[in-house]
Length: 94
Image 1 (cartoon, rainbow, N blue to C red):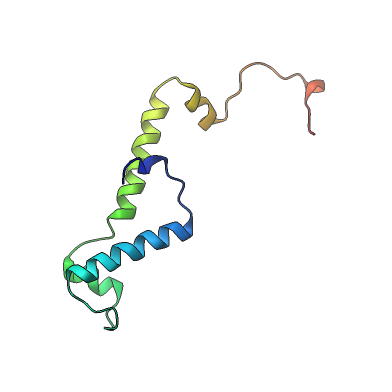
Image 2: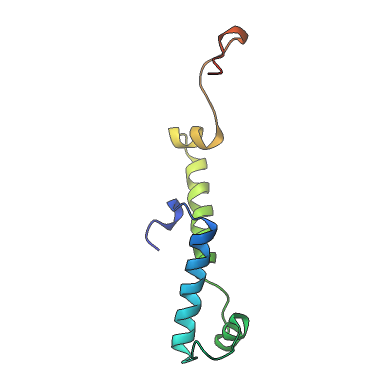
């Protein structure tokens, strides 16, 4: 989870993280992978929600809030700001 707030996570990565989390829960509860137990049933047994993905998303929101509170270059990049004026005839669309 170190530096999770700066990770770029695709849908495939998120599925792998969720599968890893479920594999860990199943091992802790000693549920065989051949047993026909759904993921929601496993989470009900351990009385938990999916916590790894929630933690990553929470850290991302906190980091973004931290960046947006400060006046730095990264804030300008995230907000799409550009300094200076561009006159109508000077735009380069190449």
